[in-house]
Length: 226
Image (cartoon, rainbow, N blue to C red; front, side, top):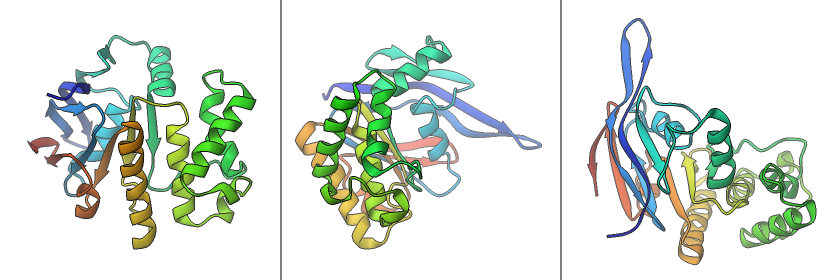
């Protein structure tokens, strides 16, 4: 059996909208190390809420998450913030790049939060941007880049601190078909080359098609894993 890099134990998260609605209900799953995992399901099924919990961006009402055997529940807010900076990378549908920073500065930013020197951060950022084919775009601002190029910068930023796990929420949802394929190729490349673990939230069957494990959600529950 593959090593497990993350697992959850009976996660629950509800919102009160006149009545209590469970976005995540009794979810127990595991993420194998070195694999691409897709979490799929219709809009409103709880995928993005689950991703926020896995990424330590929100806390569950009950249950726990373990990343490399570290319990999220046992961490203070400061401890959880440090785990996010060192162990997790994030890729968003709408890129979330800092508009007044260049491509290389956006990739350098996460490294500044964990004490990497500017010189080393710049070298690492340039290497990552070269790997995603953006050597000639290092000093461009986000608005000077296409959507596909912005997402490649965002992937580089997510990988900057050598995270244990990269979480991607609808990473191709704002891209044309050509740019989508480029991004999927990058996920496959970094997975094959570095053994990088990815969790992709998607409703797109072609995105789920690159995963070695697929988790299907409906109404806040995991229906199947395959």
